[in-house]
Image (cartoon, rainbow, N blue to C red):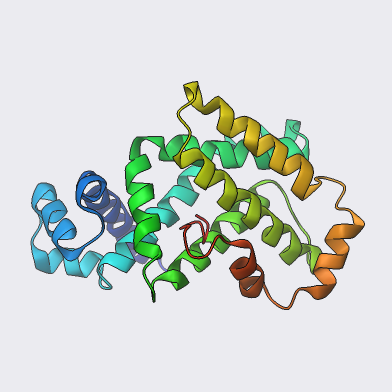
Length: 229
């Protein structure tokens, strides 16, 4: 890929980010729809043709970009926290916490995303996005596993992450203190990081592929990150 091509792609991603920021306020009130995207395009000062060029698959493309950007921002923020000085358990907990803290300004949009993904036929993007999120977290945490641990780590984290997102959506405690306590308990009791126990190995032996794992771990198409959301 040439430098010119990289520059074009970077500009396109920056424009997608800008337009997404104009769309999200409408999602908070009206959910994900073609009408919502049109309102966002109007606010961004672009034509419908330009909107379609930026998000060819419409709503699903825009949701995918919303979740992908959240992963990208999470990794960037996580890397600035000097993760090399943390234990692996701290790295995982910190990355998940960053992801949700960054999503807080768009909490209602996250809720609306879950509602959209709960519609029959929309679950695939949620499952893929959850896998991408937990994979990004493990890689940022320094995971280099290539054996059964690769998928079992991601499958177990998918369960932890999905449950934490759902808890967070209904948490009214100050600074989400109850969510962070919930997350810590889930990591302690379910993940068993860093000493992946015999329970993890047993799960790995039964695991067929990452997508099957995610389907069993995710809460019945209710999470974007569910999917990972």
